[in-house]
Length: 79
Image (cartoon, rainbow, N blue to C red; front, top):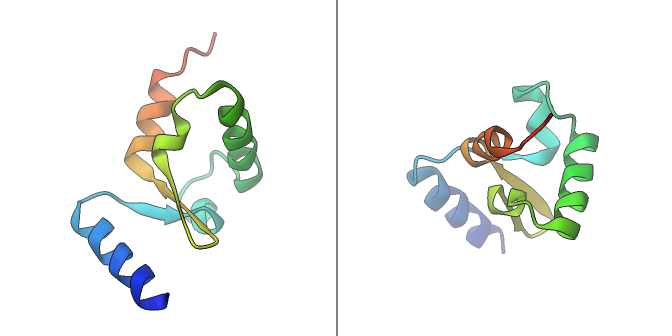
């Protein structure tokens, strides 16, 4: 299992996409907090706003594609 996870991390890093573990998110960005991020994920499950495309679950870890997340933020219509 560990070998598969290491392989997937290596493969993901070669795609020039930066994946950050959700538990490490606030070390890189102030917004959203991990609690807010989990809330956004739960809300997304109900209305499918596209956030799930920015998140991958490998084992028990949630990995966030940093670029895809901020693209999703830009597409939101916050009035």
